Length: 67
Image (cartoon, rainbow, N blue to C red; front, side, top):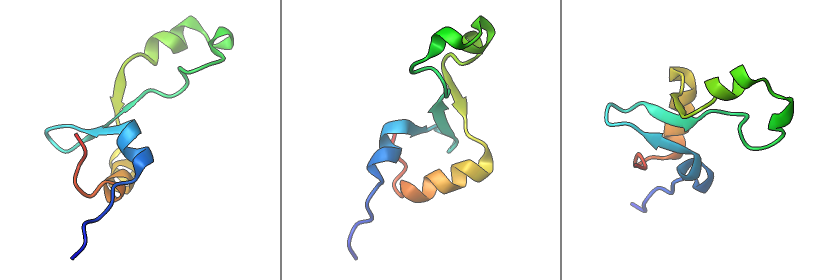
């Protein structure tokens, strides 16, 4: 059997935690931040855990759980 390939875009954007949850950076922090409120920018710091239905989709694209 050939190896399954991991989607390149997925391995750049997502990480899997030790418990199997998918971690992702908060959206909306790359550009055009002058129009965003300070509260939005504060709350968008760091990473977040993806919801279970979305995590299922992402895990299909990375069969070996990129860490």
